[in-house]
Every structure is written in structure tokens, then in C-alpha cells.
Image 1 (cartoon, helix red, strand yellow):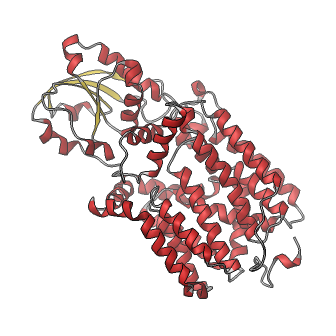
Image 2: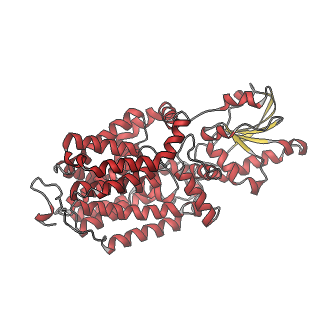
Image 3: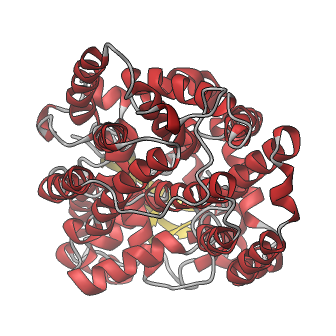
Length: 496
């Protein structure tokens, strides 16, 4: 890195006339290798509960669902249609997204003045961080978020550093698309917008293309926004439910997970990156945006990983600074250690049969909820098959949560399971069992509660052999609801 790469304040230089160039070949090699590794391990373990839910939602395409916008369920639908109805098929897009993310973070480093070394460091550090690996191994709402938010950040940098207002339009289009995945993109935009107002450069707000970008974002996102407005803003209702259900735990884990989400060595570079951004007025708004986002997420009780895209651009900025450190070899060694830990923690390296009780299961919810979901269907099928033939023909399944419902739906054909109903989140809106249904095999519902709405309920066992939350869940056979289903169904609704 030369003196021409930085301003007098030590921050990244404004390079208005610098032509765009592709990333170094080494960056592309890192991205390709990351995709290859993620595809290779994609069949290990099994479906995560969210993947089964998205697969289920994708069977009924909508402009929106009560607890999630439509993008991730649509990815699930397209993946199973094009590549087949397998866990590997669902994980092709996540792997490709992470490859793109690796390149994007390297490009962020380049925009901030980083040369070849900084870009390779950014790519390698991203490819071996916990959060990108989790998002690349499993289809989660986090998966498209990291890519879309990082692409928006790249556009913002090109506006702030190059003065190229054309990227307001690109940012607007990307924000509109991001709204179909999670409305949280407004946290990034609000944080950066506040940063520009407080720290500048305010002249970018006078560019008419900014407002054209805003209108473009609203136009692209309008079908989803119309869905939200005409359904009493379900995303706000879900946010409130999550705040009540998980808010305290999320706040307690927030600060430690800011270090764990990428890795301790990467966290050091995030600090260096924040300082680098703060020292340059052109990009100080991005430094302001991170604590603003943290404050909003803490207040709302949101999950710590909502800051993932912020941490990635801080890391990219830190790589630009670290490229000039004398003790760079020590840093690379620390990143290598983090890489080993990240692979063990984020990818299905520990054998599934040994996962329960390990630190990986304790820390990584994605891992523990990806083992045993097929057994949910298999063990429920044994109960269904044990019913008298006359009852089995008219029985239905009642699932306590969307993960159980998704598992029962996924393997219904293999195990000969009846129709699945659930009062959880979006599935409640799909309606109750048909009137006249007398026999229900309930999975995940407390037997005491079931006895208040059925004339007879008999315990039929508990799920076993799973490291996640399905371990020990009751299976209950209930007969003869005490009231019509249309009257019982409102009380079955629960959001979490």
C-alpha cells in the first residue's frame, strides 16, 4: 500500500477517476474453493428445520407470508424444482451465494483503498468465518441477506468515495429486492443515512439520483409492502413476538457473539476497520452506522447475527489497514487458527451420532437442528401405523411448530403420513383440519392442553435421538374434538 492510497487523516482515499477492475485471481480461486467445499459437505447431517419450513412455504407461492417475505421460500421452490427435492438441492444456492459474498467483501476492501494483499486477506478471512460458512451451508434468510446487503454497501462506497451517483440507482434496486427477504435492510439504510447527516458528506444527498433510487426501491418492493399493509403489518407482529420470546437471551448474547460471528482474529480487524472508516469523512457514515444498528437491534431484542453485513464491511476495511502491518504473518497465523475453529463449529464435521453434548451442539443451533429431522417423521409414522385401520384412514397430524410440520410434510410420501396442520406462524393461516376429523396425532403439543379440547387423549411416546429442541417432544393420539374445528382453530394460533 502506498501513500497515494490514503488521505492525510489515514482513511481511504477518494478515487473518483479510478477505473473499475476485476478482483485478483487469487480472490476468485478462494471463492471457487469455498463453493466447492460447501457443496461437498452439503449432504452431511440433514435438513435444518428452517429449510423444511421454507420448502413447505414454497409449495404455496405468495407475495408474502406472515413471518417471512417470499424470497427465501421462493429460492427453496426453485431449487427443488430445478435440482430435485433433496437437501443438496436446497444448498446449491447458499453455496453459490457465499462464493459471491467472498468476492464482494474483497471488492469492499478494494474500494477502501486495498491492494492485492488486502483483497486476498478479505476473501480468505470471509471464506473461513463462522457466519458466512453457516449461511453457505444452510438455506436461511441470512443467506441472501449477507449478499444483498454487502452489494448495497459496495454501491454506497462507490457513491461516497467515487462521487458516482449512478450507484444510487443500483442501491435502490438491490434494496427493493432485499425487502423481499427481510425488511431489516432499513437498518443498514437508516444507519448510513443518519451517519451521512451527522458526519457527511452531505453533498451526496443533493444528487437527484439518490431520490430516484429511493423511488426505484419502493417500486420494486411495492408488492411486498402492499401485502404487509393489507395484512396488518405481520412483520411488526412477528418482531414483537420474537422480542417477547427471545429478546432477553438475544441481548445477553449480543456482545460475545459480535466476536464469535466472524472469529476473534476477524474481530480485531473489525475494530481496525471501524477506526479506518471513522478517520475519513467520506466514509465515516459507515462507522456511525454500526453502533446505530447495534443500538436498534438491542432495543428490539433482535438476533446478534443481524449485524453480520456490518461486520463484513468493517472486516474489509480492517484488511486494508492490516495489509500494511509489520506483524502480518502473526495475523495470518491467527486467521488460520480461526479458520480451523470456524470449520468445526459451522460445518458438519463432527459426526451426527456424536454431536449431542458437544460444544458445537451447544453453540451452533443450525447444526443441532439439522440432525434427526427425518426421525421426527419416522417416529410419528410408527404411531400412525399403530392406529386401527378405520381411524388411520381419517386421521390428521397436528404439529406444534413449523419444523415438525416441515419434517412431517417432507417425508409424508415415504412413510405414508396423513395431512399436516399446525397453528404456528404462517401455517395457522392455512386453516384447520376438515370438519368431521375425529382422530389427531399431535406432535409437540403439551398433553394437558390437548385434553381441554379433545374428549380423549392418549400418550403415544416421545421423540428421541435428537440433539435439538425436538428431543423429548411428546406424541399424543387424541380423539373427538369437543367443539367444531372452526371454533377451536383461533386458540391454536401462536407466533414465535
